[in-house]
Image 1 (tube, rainbow, N blue to C red):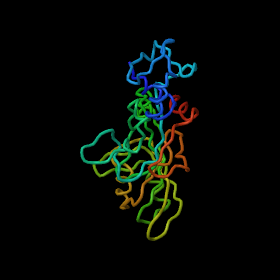
Image 2 (image 1 turned 90 degrees about the vertical axis):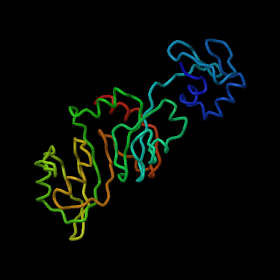
Image 3 (image 1 turned 180 degrees about the horizontal axis):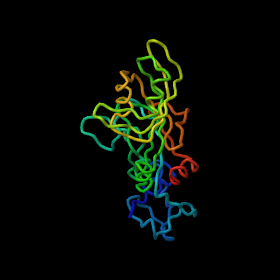
Amino acid sequence: MKRLDNLLVNSGYGSRREVQKIIRQKKVTVNGEIINRPAVHVDILKDEVCVLGEKVLYKEFVYLMLNKPAGFVSATHDKFERTVLELIDDEDKILEPYPVGRLDKDTVGLLIISNDGNMCHRVLSPKRHVEKKYFVRVDTCLNSSHIEIFSKGVILEDGYKCKPVELKILNSTPTGSECEVVLTEGKFHQIKRMFEAINSNVLYLKRIEFCGIELDENLNEGEYRHLTDEEVNILKLV
């Protein structure tokens, strides 16, 4: 069961205030009966809801792309920190989406937010080997020897050997380098720890691609949009 106004908001009929106005103007029917109370509950699987005679096609899942800024944690709730859900409008939080995976508090870039539990389980499963691409800025001069080390699997400080990682050096100077890293794992602080293992410190970390979906360059940090049908299909085919 779901509140009528929540259903209409999530189905794209406007903000909560706008859909409540539509309902009170007697423009909404449930199973052919005019309903003018926003708080009425409907069965999304059985009831037919119409707005001005047009049947409402209810969406069960929501899929969002957020360009995460620094300073936010990848969680739905936190007692001490701001969460990425605070950047999502109320009408897009009705279906209770959550971050698919996580980015560290000071890491920016692409973060998928959804309530599709099956999809989330698949793309995060280690068996799926989903690729994640990052832009990285470090404080040392990288060279071909580092590319080889990453390709063979970096050994972290606790003795864990990472799976092979693709390292592409974009530019390198005696005081620092910029590069791209593609990995299929998601160990705690993995990228920072891999660079620490070669005596290099990460100064800036941005995820630019996840599961074949690229970060929308039109999104400023802190902005988000709904995934396109094509992008959703990419996630569902994992």
